[in-house]
Amino acid sequence: MANPKPRVKVPKKASKGEVITIKTLISHPMESGQRKDKEGNLVPRQIINTFKCEFDGQLVFECDMDPAVSANPYMEFNAKVENSGTFKFTWVDDDGSIYESENKITVE
Amino acid sequence: FVAVAPRISFAATDDTEAAIKAFTGGAEPATGTVTLDTPEIAENGNTVPVGVSVESPMTADNYVESVLILAEGNPSPAVATFHFTAMSGAAEAKTRIRLAKTQNVIAVAKMNDGSTFIDRKEVKVTIGGCGG
Image (cartoon, rainbow over all chains, first blue to last red):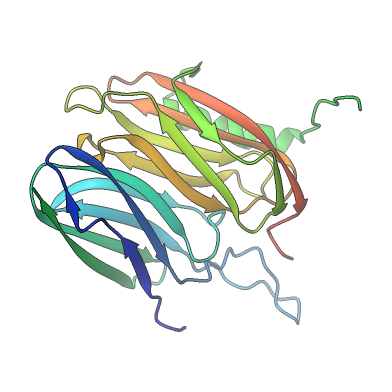
């Protein structure tokens, strides 16, 4: 499978204590395990089952996903920032693959 | 136009009820506090935008722990579970989901003190999203 490409939108700057909005998208078919191929065989399930956002090692937001999440899973959520630091985003695939992305933010 | 109560198969309802019970620890969730934001009509069931927001100060001792999203009429009702922390700042999340047919989407929120809240909205689906 093509290597899933994460796309993340985090503001570059924020003021102390501000609640920012983070948007993430990752290219992935999210094969539900319900679909049949041309020969009528069930296509085995392969989805991203977990998404996690951490800020300097502390958990901010996590999502457990089931096959009912659309292909190219989109996630929008919030984070409260008190100081400059790095957001780390992690996606975990059913096959054990881990996809990661990092974004720095400056808090003034 | 006459409103007709949606007819739901017993199996789907049972699965959904069981999932809610497992999430709340058997408690009956109250209404209010949690708001589910879904379109009234989804033309394409493959990607239906769903948002959820919960009223909460989101402080270290008073926050929303998690929100369970269920789709009653899908082959399996589980959709996603959001987990929040005090660092989330606001208990809000948006994603896109698959809906096989017209059905109720359900959000159940669990607070850190164990109390639970529920909201449900019907989404009319023009083209189902579980492609066979």
